[in-house]
Length: 508
Image (cartoon, rainbow, N blue to C red):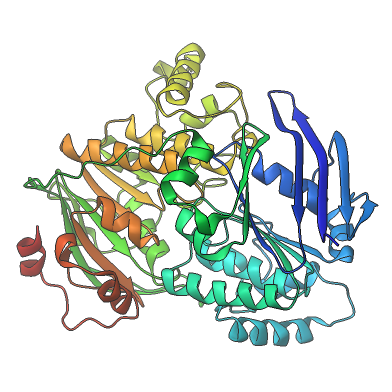
């Protein structure tokens, strides 16, 4: 008997048909991949199974019986749990309170807190139950979502980009967990753009393109290239990362020390590094090790640091607000797309105004035609699937919104671009496009600082690598001289010397 069967499910929105007659079968104990480019309809399909979205037509069968899943509560009652790509957590509540809300009330909050500690330990997913969600990084929030799903003992677990902000070590731990769950009879629907993961983990793969099923394959018998062709109709372009001599120092960080803002934050200790014109410096690290605090200090969200600890073209900027830094050529892409990178309910055109002010005239008057034209040009240049410049940011898939936000800052022709998690939740074609654009910026003389938990990405585009661990920065190392095991060890804080100005210059 099949655990789950979808029969010709369809769902339409005003601007797009998200799913068109989609059929899919999942067996008990099967890890089943759903593959497709951004906007192919994967997340909408999963939300229909989970009861978060109602299908326009079609049938869902559960253990051979037709069911109507009208709400997530009904889905959980059947034994269906889901980890969303865009998290469904209340920022003002603790991790434990968020998990407790998703469970039946047979357990007290204290019992849930105790169980979270046990589950997170058993599965190697570090979660602090009493920590408020608003203090968590994206990676830490993802772990809360996964632990919450595991707490329900699901018969079907839906994972939408579960490893997008996990480290390689955490991914391996998660895979052990998922294989164990499958061996116990739990079915898993697994959405990921990481083709290596799908080939290593999944038993079966259904491919979607433009809302329709275009193929079903055994991923263990496929290559990354063949899966790419099924997904996007072509192989992703090969990046050209030619070595070049960097220019002047654009960003200099000297002895940056900041006490944490709250008990759950991370203090920064004596951080120092440089980024030069025409180079990409990558920062690796396990989420929650000071990345958020460093990005806040560099972007201007946190202006507490000593004035000379952050310098842009030799000028101290640590006390300057974000708009002053942008005027000097520093642009920033935060890791959180919705809520920080974009206002969910505003249109794409309106969201350009968060960092782009070319269309603001004297007295603050907006040239609305120019605002819409800018948004439309970004949609076309970066191949964003959206219903036009008036589409709300929240209506886009995660990957398409990411392309728009990265494109918004690249198009501004920055002198220094700081990007956090540039290709989180982005398909292989779009990821290659974003990385290619970053390399093009670098070749044009821009200085780039890229924070990512994707080691493959950092090795692909970075000229030099740094690692942040426990609020401290590793020495700088040329990417050509680094290895993944070495960087993995550094991510645990295991480097042999403190970074120095001389080492940074030597590696540049």
